[in-house]
Structure formats: structure tokens, C-alpha cells
Length: 570
Image (cartoon, rainbow, N blue to C red; front, side):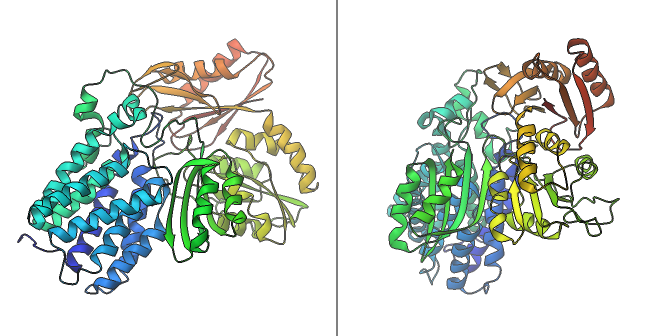
């Protein structure tokens, strides 16, 4: 293919589409740059979803209309941004699009450099407290290199090459700027994803092959530098739990995002308010509509700040940063009555005073919930967080005027709490954060009592449960329990972090149970998921019989992904 001398409308569209495809291919590897060595990362997923929204909007514009294409990229970026990395990426794309929009004859090296400078400026402006060693640094350093190259009279291709080279150097040095990256043995995941934009640029300009994604082992493809960069190679093998783009994982637990209607002159007051209750603040937009992102420990305050300054938040999304997972599992609309009806309100069920809507994943859990009297199920959990609209739809279809929602995940609790204001029914939330807590709450559920009476009993039952879970580490790291190697089994206590680690599944499980089963325990609920075997389950019940003979044990087939065993101790 001939080398392009200018970026015209067709080339711009090809760059964006190619970037989307590249990030999608490398999303798994980007996700591996995570705070804990469990399948919890979502930088790649958020960037990929953001780009899917951008491309979908772009495809609605006329292919030869530069202005319409750039407007579509900008609008799609604003409305489709997901997560901290997606919001910053949206500003990068909006900066590029707003600059290239005026390049009616196509952008040469100078035009590309100007676009990248606008991208960098927009990204920094969106963040209340910019942190160096993140994607911000990589974008700025690459933009500076582009400007220097263009000023020296370089061609479009030469500017693009200089930009990519500088971006790689900047990415390799992110751990030197952000200690948590140094401790975790990784480079910044957002910066690694941004380099794929520069790869897409070179591919469209000169046919340079895109980096091939390697097997998803956490060290391949476009993010090989995360483990193989010079700065990583010079570090010792001992790694402490840390992550990309955050200062301290213990500081802020929740990621809150929403769109907000607010007059532009009031946005600084909004940012100031958020600055008092959180960090990792990114606010982008204008003309009265804003896309807002914050990490905080106070979800309610994150919403109230908008209301206090006269804003109207909508499409609120909350994620628990300790619990995010990278695998996107298909939402299973499971049947509650032999597969005849979709998940949601079950037509034909008898009317009750108070119905329960539960959120869960796994065919076994859906069946168990039905047996315990749940009238409506919404598929979800972890990063499969259902929307307020999905919960509302199920509430409207259950056969009761009073409803209780069991979120069974911290991410979903604040979303569930929005439902009552949206329906004529009386809706209360029992803030369960695990399947084991949900089961305990359902044991005391009385369909003929009011939802308020039920809530009091169910909250007490849920609060009596200590929960733990077992999964596999996806990379080497170090935690309070010692060295963790990729493939090790780790036991995690809700609110207590990693408490056990072993190469053998049973060893990790036994150590986990030792930490959560006390002398006052009366009942242990074991929920089996994907990867559980009868032999291991028998060993667990045998061990409990030997070490805690007076404690009752219940085993339920849940079918949940990623975590072969969940435990609840009452």
C-alpha cells in the first residue's frame, strides 16, 4: 500500500476502527495488569467497550464527511466512555477529532502533532488531580515527541514513528514515576492500551503490522512491556500487591460513574465537591452534559455532590474495585420454572404480600433461589452489574405490591437502592454482598409479612454470615500471606483480603476455612461453581467433619464462574 502523506477522512475512520479491533484483541492482556492476582482487571474491557461505542457512532456518519465523522467520534467517546481508562481515552479521541475536524485537506505531520497535543491537554484537563506514571504521561510524552519531529520538518510517517517510539519509552518508565507500579511489577495498563492507537496509526499510514496478541497469560501481546520492560527486568522477583493507575488500593473502594446535566459554569464547583470525597476524578463533556468518574468510599456522597450544585445525575454505575473481574460472561436469562419463562417476574406465580427479586449468576443459584421463594431473578454479579432499568423491569413484573431486592454484590447495592423512587410499588433493599448472605436472608423470608418486617429479619440474618471465596492467581505477586505465583489457589475473605495461598486447591481452601470458621460457628454453606469436583467437595465436607464436627454443613450447586467454591459461615 502507498504511504499516506496526509490523514484524510477515510484514514481517520480506519485508524479508529483499527484501534478498536486491536484493543479488543489485546483486552485480556491489558486486564491482567491488576491490583490483585485474580481475574479482576478491566482496563482492556473498558477501553474496548468505549471504542465499540465510538465506532458505532462513527459508522452512522457519512463516510466522506469529515465534520460529521469527527463529531461522531467526539459524541461517541463522551457517551460511551467506561471506567477511568475509558473516560481518559475518550478525551484523547475527542482532542484528536476536534483538531482534525479543521484539517479539510488532510492532516500532515504538523496536523498530527497538533491533534496529539490537543489530546494530551484534554486528558489532563479532565482529571482533577493528574498522576504521573499513568496514561496521561504516555500521551503527553508522545505528543511532545510528535511536536519536536514536526517542527524539524518530518513527514507524517516520520512524525508517527517518533511518536510511537517516545510512547514506548514513556510507558517503560511509568514504574519509576508511580511507586505502586514498581511494587506490582507492571507498567500502566492505560498507557499500554494507548500505544495501540499509535500502532493503528502506523498501520494505516504505512501498513506497519499490528502487534499480535499472544496467549492470554498476562505477559503477552501489546503489553509485554508490563513484565519485560527494562524497568521491570531490573527489579527483584518479589512483588507486592499493587496496580496500574492507583496510589493505594485500600484508599477508595468504589468506582462511581454517571452522566450529569449541569450548566457549564457550575462544573468547577462540582469538581471541588468531588475532590473532598474521592480521587481518580475525571469529568469530561460540556454544553450541559458531562461524563463523570470518581473513586470513593462514599457512594451516596458521590451522587449528592451533583444534586448539591444543581446537577441531575443519570445512568449511575457503581463498581467495587476489589471485586472486578475481567471475563465478560453472557448474561444468562435463566428460567425459574423449568425453563419456560424468562428471568424476571414469573407470570402465573401466586400473589404474595412481599416478593423477592434476587441478583445471581449460575444456573444452580437460579434454581436454589426459586426453591427459597424468589419470584424474580436478574442475572448478574461482579462486573456483570445489572442496570437500574433491569431491576426495575423485574420488580414491575413480580406478583406483589411490596418487593425486597437482594443485590448479592456490593456493586449492585447502590443501583438497587434507586429502584424504589422509580416505581409505584414499595421496594426495600437488603444489602447482601454475596450469594451466601442472600441464601441466609432467604431462610427467614416470609412472603406474607410486609417488606419492612422482612427486611429487619433478613438484614440480621445476612449480617450473621462471614463469607470467603477461592480462585486462581493470574500472575506472580506478593501479599500479606507471602509469595503468590501464577496458577496458585488463593482464599479471599470479604473485607479481609487474601488470607490463604497454595499450589493445591484443597490446601488453600482448608487455610481459608481455618480463618473464617470460629468456635461459635453453627452452619457452613458451601456453594460450588465452575471447576468444582465431587472429590474436592467430599474432601471439604470431610475436613469440616474432622475439625468442626458440631457445625452443620450445606452444599449447593451454584454454577458461578471463576470461583469454584464460595463459603458462608453463620
